[in-house]
Image (cartoon, rainbow, N blue to C red; front, side, top):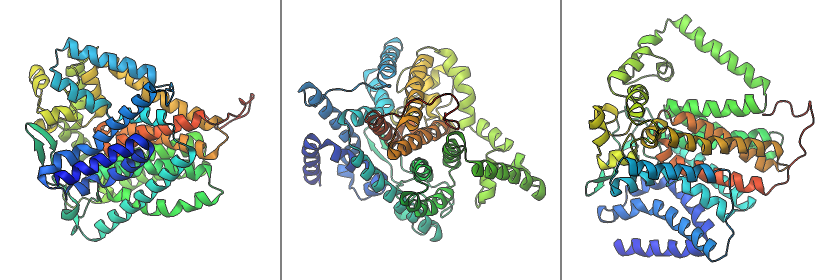
Length: 482
C-alpha cells in the first residue's frame, strides 16, 4: 500500500509539473469524496492519504514559483496582494511578540493561510473561460450527486449512516489528524452524504447553490437557466435535510443578496415579506413558546428553525460553554488581553490548537479549553482569527476578503460576458454567506468549503480582468445595481 501510494503521488507530481490546471481540477472534484474515501485507507498509509490533498496545494504553489523564476509566467498583481502581505507581517510580528514555539507557529500559520494560497495559485495559472465553465458544470454534477445521496440517506431512515460516517479517529504522535465524527444526532435525522458531517454537506451545497442563483438570474431566459432547475429541485431539499441552520441562513443571505439587493426582484421581496409574516403568525396561532425551545431527539424541522431564536438555547450555549460563551468572552477576555497582535497562530480557537492540545493561552487567561471545555476550537472563524492575530490581523484579513467581494460586484456591473457576470455575482453572494457562517463554525479551515471560496475568488479575478467593460452609466442609468 505504501508503494502504491508513492507511485500515485509521483504520478500527481509529474502531472502537476506539466499540467497544473488539470491537477487543480482533479483536487476540486476529489475533496467532496475525500472523507468517504479515507474510510477505505489502511492505518499504515492514512497519514499520507490524509495529507495528500493539502500537499498538492503546496506542490501547485511551488510550480507557480518555479514558472515565475524561469520566466514561463509573469506574476499578476491582484487587489488581495497588499492586505495579504500585511496580514503575513502581522502574523510574523505576533509570533515574535508572543514567543510562539516554531512548531506551533508553523502549524498555526498553515491552518490560517493554506487555502488562501489557492486564490493566488488560480490567479497565476490563469485558467481560461472554458476551463472554469467545464469545472463548474462538473462541480454542479457533484452537488447533484451529493444531494441525491443525502435524500436517499434520509429516506433510508439512517440505515446507511454508519457506512458513510467517518467515526474513527487518527493521530500522528501527539497531533490529531482527524478526531472522528461523533454522531450525536439521531440516526437518519441529518444527512451528510460523503462529506462526513451534516454541516459540511450544508456548507458545500449552499456555496454552489449561491453560484447557481447567479447563473439562474443572468441566464433566466435561456436554456442554461432552465437546465439549473433539476439542480435546485434536489439540492435545496438536501440542504434542508442537513438540519444545518448555519447553512440555511448562509444560503438565504446569498440568495437575497442576488435577488433583492442586486436584481431588485419584486417577486422575491413579496415572498420574503410573506414568509416573515407567516413565521410570526405561526407562533401566534400555534402558541409555540420559542423562548424555551432547546435541542432534543426527534426535533422537527419547524422546531429546529425556531430554536435559533430561543433564549433558553442561547443561555444553555453560554453556560454550557458553546458558541455564545465564546462570542462574549473572546472580545472581553482574549482580545482585551492582547488587542493589537493577538496571541499568535496556533494559540487560540482554531483547528491547530485542538490538534496540538495547546492549552497555554486558555490557562493563562483562566478560560476553559474551547467549546464544552474540552475541544480547543471555539466554532467561530472570525473570533479565532481575532484572538490569534489581533485587531490588526483581523483588519487586514477583512480588507482582503471584503475588497474581493466589492471587486466582484464591480465585475458583475461592467462585464459584457454573461458567464462572467453570473460567476462574479454568484461568488460574491457565496462569500457573503461564508462570512455569516464563519461566526458559527471554523469554515475558513474546512477544506470542503474554504478551498472553493478561494479557488472561485481566483477564477473571478482572472475572468474579470480578461473581459471588456461597458461604458460607465450616465446619471439616471443603472438603477437597481450596486
